[in-house]
Length: 204
Length: 204
DNA sequence: GTCTATAGAAGGATAGAC
DNA sequence: GTCTATCCTTCTATAGAC
Image (cartoon, rainbow over all chains, first blue to last red):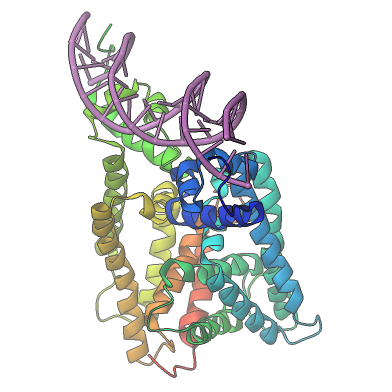
């Protein structure tokens, strides 16, 4: 037999993306074979090449789509430009954690598999990554300028905050003692402390 | 010819470790071949098996040695038990960053390649990792108990602080605008802000 | 749209010469 | 202690049947 009963291209394309995302996150891009992915999708390896030109593109598209979703989701609910910096940073923290926990696999890949991108693909993704870091950077700068924040270095602070928030994925299991709301509160506390008292502000 | 002039087992063993560390950090364990490592060392692939039973053990030993070095280095300069919590946390931050920047490759591997360890090896490394996290956890608890710190959740705070400090490796290049001392100061500011005001302390 | 089959390259690991 | 040669497996990607 050639074509499976009830087979469906749209569905397979979707399942390919999901399976690849799950496997790349769990075992790493380089450690996962096209056969493994095909097996998870329920087709033979050769059939995957109807949906992706190669494995590298598969990785790139997962990461690119993720970055687009992330930036788009932020824009869709971004605070108004003239708001309170504290409110903005709180919104960012909540947003990042919430988005993160809904898409643990994608974020994991986005941070772990950068080195497995081809040179060109890396540049494209890196640009979007910086765009996201910049969103936080701007909030921190505004806070410093308005005198509400006391950060020594807004650039490093944005790195630090993102690293700390993203770190949630390394231990969050979804079945532990803490639910989403609790985690958000705890991290909000820490970030508030960090930005409000994060330095003698001897430089900026 | 069989044995290379001036060849030397001790030296090759050392170079194997160094080359594997460098390559695993740069490209990832799964993406690096034994042939690549051998080429970097300057021997043929077969010769590597005089020094390691297999590739997995090579990864494990790099990580295990690193964790031992890390724990040992901390013990060698750990603050006295009865000191000020603020002083202790500052010492931890300085220590982590300094140790980190001297061994970027090893720490990168220690955090990125956990999933490529065999099940048994993972358990062994994970135990040492927890031991290290615990060092910080104890400092944070002491600080909370003494009333100097105001943390909502010391366990999550230790995760957050370690994630944030370890994140330095993702951008530090050693040739940028910031030297070690400056980076230490900036992160000290942030961590101080975080622990001193990191919550309404509604729970602990 | 998916299958089977396979080309062609590369991988981990071993054997035996020197 | 290292080399060459090679076994065997696995991989990505393609070709052609259905």
